[in-house]
Image (cartoon, rainbow, N blue to C red; front, side, top):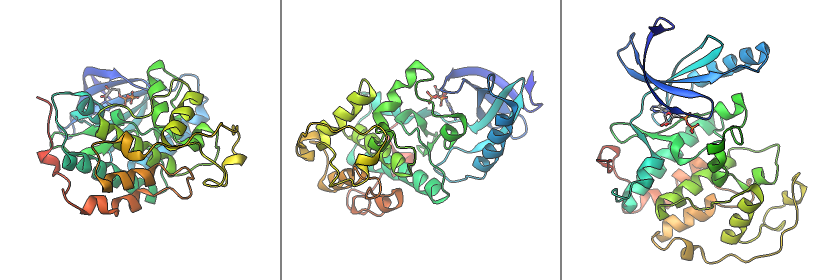
Length: 303
Ligand code: ADP
């Protein structure tokens, strides 16, 4: 049976943050798609209209490095979001120990990630939930960011489902200190964590609670102080931490080039106002110096 007279349901792909995701065929185009069924159960009707209006804006967000939102419609009390189908994701690639990632491959993944981010940030859309399994990889190796803008529309997904605790590892310090106003810097911090994970092949800052997450961040980069980050003391959940000094960044990333380390340190700047932007990161010499980023279709693929 067709959904919305257009989509032929296939198998379930998985249970995500907002609900079940299944594979389908778009009979209008013949294209394989992924449909996200979002439970709207407890929400008031007004919220649905707001959500639909915002979803409409996301449909306009088209870039080679953003998963296209093909269609959105309510059906049987659920909101259905139709996306282009992607083969795999960056988490699967990082975890696959049979895949060797060269410095040029890592550069390619980072460049595509930052291109997607820079595009959305230019349009004032934040992702807010960047993590390797939200970076989907197509059959030609192209990386695209998934779930752009959804966190804002449907609420921050953290704590709603148990598997979501991992999102904490990518959370910027301003969020951990309870900032209510934050900007594109939260996505850049998360992209820095993903960069670190590509280099070391394991999640970088694996906090077991929000407090522990800050502890892990401070252990890596030294305690944040108001002299580096003037707004720090005014954040809602700010508490003074005992000072710890940062180890040399080099010691945390033995395999990284000097250019990679320099970019990393700029993405991990504490003060969000001083943190490098996605666009500036793309212009960093890391991307123009040798080795040049691998072409997407030449990136290693799972067997
Ligand atoms: P999460 O909330 O954990 O990030 P998602 O809701 O994004 O999970 O996705 C749930 C499952 O559906 C995952 O296994 C993911 O691989 C799959 N999936 C999501 N979007 C797509 C897509 N566009 N193409 C193929 N598979 C997808």
